[in-house]
Length: 489
Image (cartoon, rainbow, N blue to C red):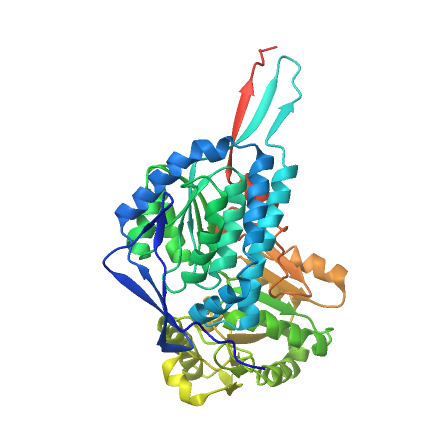
């Protein structure tokens, strides 16, 4: 099979404010994580002033877009999503080049945007934006109204899909939007937004590129922004809350995770191990709800570690555009240094570290942010690799004696995004899952696709505020307005 060929030209992608292209004198180079010598494209360095101008454009568009009947909004959202199919292959190649992901992952990241738009069009068509409540002494009407200007701040690990998971409900609610694409990987998302824009009133969708410290901070504190939708690290999520406090903005935060998987002693390793390998190494470990620590009952611990290491050793690490690659690079040097530091720390403290897999093109490694997958055993809760969100191709495996001990260790975290329980005894699994402190607990699955767009999604503790996906994501983009003629009895 031939390698997908990237475009030879460098993409120059302007910002878009109020239906007009906007550029600056300074540009950011977007490079390929698989080979940083390749410049994929350039985006302008936006400023706080650009962010404010975009909120003003969105505010001007708000009366027109929010006044459209929900059925018309749904029709436009569905049509805009379908339009993304036209250049999906080229957009997937662009996404693979800027993120370093495999082509299969990039295609999923592009095509899932279409599905998200169609899903929220259907949700909007069935949703009750207004309802009468029974009242004995008058009339009470509850209206769910659009909030106004919404800011969507998108992370670099899956910018198209995660961006659209926010955009779908934001637009269906009748809000207008300013999107801040991730600096590391903005191009495929910006190209997608360019496809959407003609389906909506001018200024409904705007996007501003630039550093989070200026553009992102300006959106967090902008007076006209009524809702912030942020996906990213817990530390930056705390900054969002601080900035939003001055004007009491509504905030949805999808933050970090340190997802545990609990493997009981009655499992079939031939089923569980390949499943968990997928759950750990999806997008090279750079998914918030990838499995990040595995607890295995003592009697199966050694067999599990041995088999997990053997299966992981089959990975071929290389450029995501090469069909022989089964694991891509990390997105940037900072992440590579962080993951390598965790591996070194675990090894220094006496853990057993097995770095396995093979290099597809060893000559290319000095020019990419590559890390061989690492299986780490003989560790406990005190190791940083166990307590942190690694966000890379690395997994600690920890033994436990009793289920109670496993639950205690799984819950011993400031995070609480997702978790999973693995046993053929599903009744037992449901009981254990109810004890886990997580926004989602899976039974015998924990990988990409397990959390569907129709399932509420979000975290306990420092893994976030609010819920995305499902009908609840639309509800979180709306204000509840009660109209009442009720008189005291």
